[in-house]
Image 1 (spheres, rainbow, N blue to C red):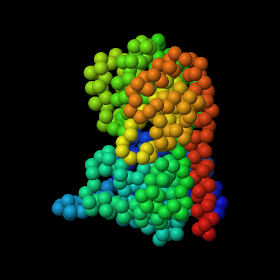
Image 2: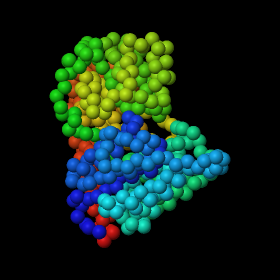
Image 3: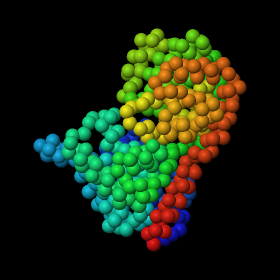
Image 4: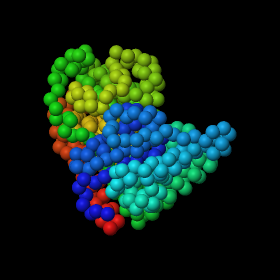
Length: 407
């Protein structure tokens, strides 16, 4: 095995059928940017993923595998048939390795996915696990609860995979602490915390802000922008509920919400009930390469989250993009957010669930241009720490240590 980390052949593996790369979710951007960053550093990256749609137009050099089901009554007795995907993954890695001779298997952790670990042992290829959430606890909280056997099996597989990987990359310190506190991993295991990042260079392109505002009919508006998915763990209802007070102090305020998700209908209903239809616009899904344009017209960018009864594991890509765009940010004082931005230095932070604090922060930024400019300048400078280029460089260092240890 070579120690040189230039021109590596890397398998990026997603063995979780729930991570559908045809959707415009944050994880898709995460995967795209990691692969792109590694390619820019001279590495060859091949993607292997479980995906219902075999075509992924935004990716190249990939194979998609269909989700396998047990048929008839077996599916009810043995409902976690996603484990069958791991066998398929294992066989495909063995076959693909004959063509691509992988130096590293980089796997994004997924429930029931053990094929990558087995392949790494059989083929003696170093394995890194990138983990963005605990999986089991998230599923129970945000989607359907597990049956006893599902939870039991998922727990065994998670411990097996995280124990046998060569290195763990956790997205936040909260997640690392959770994994150790709940005995998912041992405190002696090598864990690197790598927050998410932004394509900082994309925010340096010139945009005709006045023309863009005019095209949206927002020439004279104080524009508040949210970007991302509309899921239950975001507190967008707090922003909408705060808007009547904001409007009483700043009549020109206007809220743009970019994204799709299961909470959209409820949020639209809330805006309608509050009589805000003419002050809130739901833009729906926007291609990620258009986000710099949208943020260019923002006077304030918001990142609202709620407490959900478990540690805040998130590393919000939107936060890093707001920094990259050099925006005045109002964000919830939770988890990694407080590590990335500092109150009254690079953002204004508010208590979870406080509509009043969100409203007051937005009004303050509307009135205090000097503070807004101060936050914008600091945000732009802080963003340089969190580029996908730097992220890929840190991954390269982890690969180097794994390859050296595999000599």
